[in-house]
Every structure is written in structure tokens, then in C-alpha cells.
Length: 275
Ligand SMILES: C[S@@+](CC[C@H](N)C(=O)[O-])C[C@H]1O[C@@H](n2cnc3c(N)ncnc32)[C@H](O)[C@@H]1O
Image (tube, rainbow, N blue to C red; front, side):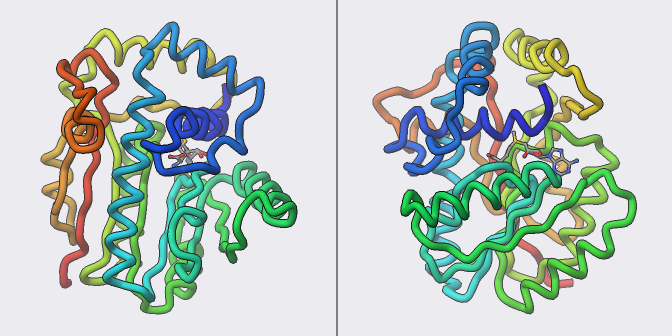
């Protein structure tokens, strides 16, 4: 498995319950190879994964819609965007930029154009940046993103990507993001808590990726404490939810009871402070 295959997997999860995820377009990425991986994860790691990713999509979609209601001239910048479809789920006038590795961005650009031409997707004017966050000198990318934003309010997203990065790459990325955003901008993040590291389900996930990683791609299994978000320089934590909280909010008829029996990711919203 290459890391880019996880981007297809996330879309397949989102398409499992469109009403919950709010994403009717994720299914466009479905393909037979991804189905094999998803079935493997459901059977060998956890059957709750598709449902949990629908909760996650719903949470960030709701947060960005609220932000763009208040900031109609705002922009969405998605780091490690994979094949997520937020630009098609938010109002057309919001400018969006997807940032990911070259293979993901090339393929996404190709397929989205094809689907827009065929009328399978509404028209959107998207911007892309190809980047590997492991690159030591991000200055070109910072300059490119900053000039594209051009002073507008921004909602940045780091969804499903921190697990794959090392601590030093993560610190560099947060630092770059801090240099680009300005007071009042939002940053959404997802990560696992270190206290979940030894749960059976978490070990099964790590094993599953390691067992199927036939490449040089990094599956760093990174976990981040909530405290680390409180301590992020330049930011204040304004919201923190886990999947139990989201299940209560979005599916009260199906509340998750045991947080250690699932892959309990934590969702964070941070606001950029004044320098
Ligand atoms: C699980 S997918 C999540 C994709 C998307 N954010 C979502 O929620 O659907 C992880 C994404 O992180 C990207 N990624 C992982 N390591 C990266 C790196 N070093 N530089 C840039 N992108 C990276 C992968 O290419 C992939 O698209």
C-alpha cells in the first residue's frame, strides 16, 4: 500500500453514509482495489471506521460552513487534501486550494476536470499545490500559498495526515502554517491521543498499515496530546471533540460508549492569535 491509497480509502468511508458525512461526491472515487483495502480494514482492524470518518467529515464541513458564513471572502486551504471533496460541498464563491504530493494532485486535477465536464460535479475553480511536507525548505510553498490567499480570511485543514508524519515534519509544517495565517484564521486538525497507542484496535491499525506497506512511504503512527495543541505557538484551541462527542451530536440514536474499542481520533479547531 502507498500512502496515496489511504486517500481513496477515506473517500470510500465517506460514501458509506452520505446523509451523515454530507458528501454525495466521495463515491466518485470508488474502485475495486480500494474496496479490497476497506474490506480488509473492516474485517481485520475495526468495522466502525466508515461511520467514524462520516462523523469526521460532517464535523469539519459544518465548521467550515460556519466560518465561510461569517467570512464570505474566506478561502479553504487543505493540507494533505487527498481526494476530499469539500470544495464541492461549500458555496461556489469560496476559493479552495488543495495541497498534497504530486501523484495525488495530478490525478485529482485530471479526474475532477473530467467529472465537471461530464456534469457529475458542479463547476469549481480549484487551485493546487504539489508538496511533500518532508521537504526541508518550505519557503517557496509558503510564498505561493500566501500570495494566493492575498490577505483573505483562511480556514486551513490538516485532516487524516498527521498520523503519517514525524514529529519534526509536523513541527515544521505547523511553523509554516503559522507564518501564512493571520489573526482570526482557523486551523482544523485531526490526530490520535498517545493514551490510545496501546489499545488493541490501534495496534491492529498500525500492524495493518505496516504489513501492507511495500514502499518507502512513511506511516509514522504519530499521536499528539491535546496539551500539544494548547501549546501550539501562535494559536488558541477553541474546540476539541472526539468520536464519542460527535456521535452524541450527529447520531444520538447510535452513541459510541467505549472510546478504547474504536480508533478514536480527536478533532481540534484552533484560532490564529495576534502576533
Ligand atoms: C488518509 S489520507 C487523508 C486525505 C484527506 N485529508 C482526507 O481526509 O480525505 C492522507 C493524505 O496525506 C497525504 N500525505 C501523507 N504524507 C504526506 C507528505 N509527506 N506530504 C504531503 N502529503 C502527505 C497523502 O498523500 C494523503 O493524501
